[in-house]
Amino acid sequence: MTTETTPTVADTRTQIALIGAGPSGLAAARNLQKLGVPFQGFEAHIDVGGLWNIENPRSTVYESAHLISSKHTTEFTEFPMRAEVADYPSHREMRQYFMDFAEHFGLRPHFWFGTRVLKVEPVGESPAPLWRITWSKHGGPAQTAEFKGVVIANGTLAEPNMPRFEGQFDGELLHTSAYKSAELFKGKRVLVVGAGNSGCDIAVDAVHYARSVDLSVRRGYYFVPKYVFGQPADTLGSKFKMPPWLKQKIDSVVLQWFTGDPVRFGLPKPDYKMYESHPVVNSLVLHHLGHGDIHVKPDIARFEGRTVFFKDGRAQDYDLVLCATGYKLHYPFIDHSLLNWQGMAPQLYLNILSPRFDNLAVMGMIEASGIGWQGRYEQAELVARFFKAQAEGSQRAEALRQAKAGPPPDLSGGFKYLKLERMAYYVHKDTYRNAVRAAAAALA
Image 1 (cartoon, helix red, strand yellow):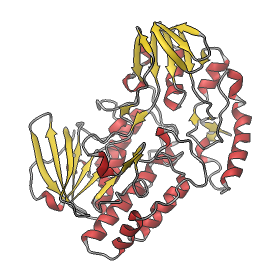
Image 2 (spheres, one colour; image 1 turned 30 degrees about the vertical axis):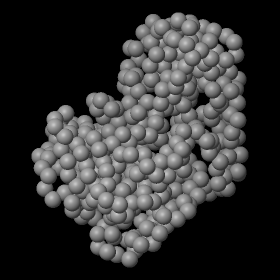
Image 3 (cartoon, helix red, strand yellow; image 1 turned 90 degrees about the vertical axis):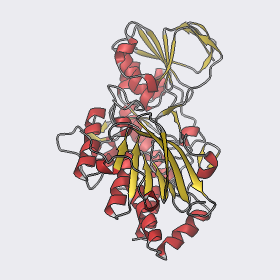
Image 4 (spheres, helix red, strand yellow; image 1 turned 45 degrees about the vertical axis):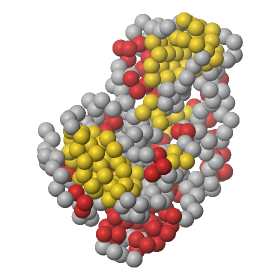
């Protein structure tokens, strides 16, 4: 059961508008609550959890989905996951975790559920304007009010990035955002496009139902097992700090001990060093490749009827082509220019704060290997402290104002990340968290 206040336009000009009640939205709500910063939450679904709530129409998780990071590197520090939760929790366990988090800290009454934000626009040209928010509750008439600031936390993994292909495919052509259950594959010849974490997970699902399973890959990947020496892989090695070149070298060798060389299964050799793109945390896909349950195909050239022509000149017939081609940043309610959108993503200070506005922040626009929910919580801590310092007229806010207007810090940790859309907001976990913590500490 959810409890909520009835949407009334009281004096919202003293409140921050918080958009989204997924993990990042809940982290923001908790930190605003802790510091006594008044806010009003908006959530399009009828409960919390964001994409981890499979009943949410915007959720892109599927029945077999689990975390690819282990629970202790992922959980909120102030709210550890229960002992009985698995090392790599399922989407069901994650949904319950976020519901429990919201219940424990009394966050639900701060949100209007079933309420979709339609438009966010500044009122005037000042660095800290009021923001006019337009929303609709349960599809009803639009309502509008002005708020003191805005925190956008509507998630980054909901808007499908669907590639365009030459020709016409007469079978089923879907994005993984539409995939929920392996029943979809029953008796079909399946081609999964893309070998990222979702693509590999879903190809493994398909093995048990499909007539055949192929994996179309454009580039090579580094495959990390979920367990090393009997422990979750992401819990090892973090105590030893090494320069990037040495870590890449050592970890690549260690990885070969556990997974061998994936090139022997027909996968392309990565043309980049380890950690320059997100690794694939999946041992089972290599297991099934080794057993001949999955076969590797190159990039697609074109479709013709049910035939897929590949760039190496080969062709094969399929009933279903499923595109595991990722997601696009999607903030449909606010003009791109207001978010300082440049190229493939908004350019924000620490991936959070607007350089132009002092009362506009984005939560969760971050990708990093092992950043966890605590990394998002620390983002929220910074935002809440900044908003509170400004409300109190504190001088401490001025240093951050100047920093966010100036040249951005290097958050790469010395790694040269691939210039891909999905890597446009990628950071090095430790470098990033240290920078965010330092900025928050300066406001304490």
